Image (cartoon, rainbow, N blue to C red; front, top):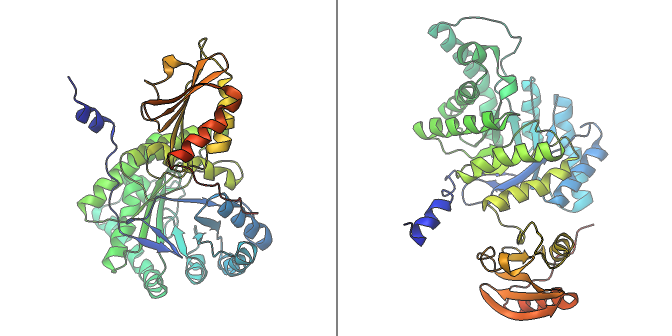
Length: 404
């Protein structure tokens, strides 16, 4: 027999893994901060107006920081004008992240203009030409030493300017050196990042955020699990950024993202997330918050429980559910159950704060937790009566006005 306490323990997620706080502009990642949501623009960086407009659109959708492609020093300098225009448009200094590949000079310039700089250990100081080569231990260590010598001045500059760095390892862009030793594997992804992390730590720089990304959720999950093992073994507590890169669009992109990001969040790992969709970037934000809500890592809206309907359903469940969501979706942390009949009533809505349950043709029963409060309310009045009940129990707040 399983006791109630044991049942609770069986479904509880692990506590969130403790990490250090890293500041990105005015936003804190890790530590006691909520899991942060970010996205990335898809406009040409040189189109300052379009990029600034998209940053603002993402910010108003709920993005707390926005990454921008920074292909060259010239593009890095443009972040100053983009930031200025963003502030003009929305009166808020949205944290901007420079996304750098291949060109270290772009990263140096981005340290002056961005709130965080993302570098990829697969192509920052290495290359990928699919060249086959065997390394002796001495040769491999010599390559690590070469990387450290080239990274040292960049680390010194980041330290001087107090800018955080994201070390982002991608499954699809591991260097030839790493591929030849570790293969195209989660182990290779992790080791590519760990090499850089050890160098940064050796130079007393720990203002880092780490990411393991792959288009395959299983690879992404395996890499993050392995990363945590290595970090714990070496006493590293850097915040983790989660994402399934190149997830696609529509249902496929959403499901892949939910699987990869959601699994790690349920295991207590993750301090900031991005849902990568082949869609406008602002479309990523609601999905990110839904994943956080569903895993219980960040509650930002109402939690709805509704049955799929069946032959016993006593009202148009889909239409009614949508009406209730539209009216009550802003009640952060409130659980509302919408059930088509009494069969799915009390039992299936046991965790709800309020219940809207079909009691008979055209009649609704309203519950507060497990208590039947009003019986046989005419359906045309039921939503207003539910609002009144929520207000009477002290759970109502007025919806915020949408920013234009």
